[in-house]
Picture 1 (cartoon, rainbow, N blue to C red):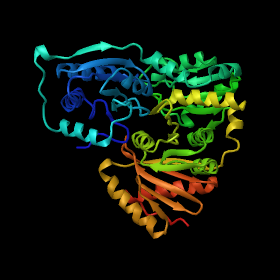
Picture 2 (picture 1 turned 90 degrees about the vertical axis):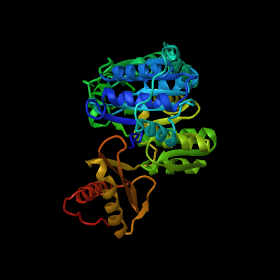
Picture 3 (picture 1 turned 180 degrees about the horizontal axis):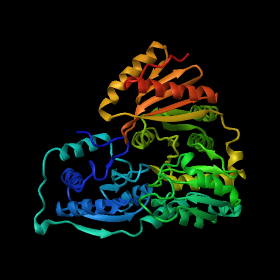
Picture 4 (picture 1 turned 90 degrees about the horizontal axis):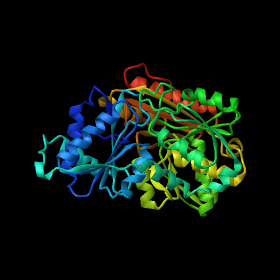
Length: 460
């Protein structure tokens, strides 16, 4: 059975994700990876994360493995530590931006990247092969605490941005930690950068009482209100495990992730004199428009940071990321990184002496609309086939890298099954906001039709 989705394993706690499942997963790790080099274990702030991490840690020790306990940290901070503590594998207990009832596991290779699909398949195979034996009493492993993960990560970011220039700007920032794992590192990072910081949802609470974990425009209503109220230069919002950063300007205007992808991508290409930028098939056309005149090239992949970072590694890309605020800075690490994105934005604004609203003002203007439709996982393949047939009758150009992307002369729509939840995500983009909305709504109706609703009228 396939357990790994777009970004690791994610299931509902008390549903598919039980203590028994966690034990099965950990036993599979114990049999897939040889004892010797340690395995690092870290977790986010969800209510179930520490108990699940203890199951993983204990099971690995009983299988003869040495465990380095990194503790509660942002996902990118754990990824940064894995190669630096000499681990052969990192295990992160997290469900990223999912609602609080979810949790799961991400596996990180010795290089700090998410493990490739073939490693996931080996783990899945071991999960399905029955119980694994335990080591003898005199062959048991051990567990040690590494308390340097947070400081190590913050110092690493500080080393590659212009701290004096940022401090001279004297930014006032409102930081929304989403009651998540960023509380351990992002406030300290902004303080060390010389920012006056007002914090929202800055205490750890795995039920996410302040707002939903995903940093969408709707979920960031408090941030959008507080930024102008306190006279801040900008607002920064993370998701639950802080591998994303989303921005709000001084007026409280939400800046979609695709704008920041295009802005910082253009900056990287300009500073490098060209180069490859990698983004999923859901990426904005604004990125192409922004970097091509500077000698940049966009390479598209499947959705998900493992696909993006592996392609970045293969092509020695200068930048990469997703339209959801998950950006990758290869000079730091090949991982989506919310705190690094925040620091990079402050660095850019300090170098250019611009406000964030001025910085995005000259970007190519597109509107991206995102919708979703509940869809049982076992029906997604049939739904996609029906959608492909429908769009082919319209003579749209189809891109099948991941799901179905239908290209029209004045916009595009992408329909793909989520790799983390039982639903189909719909992305649509066009220069005309009305056209973007129409493409998205039509896509939504087509999904509903394939699930049993009346068929929609055809798009032009």
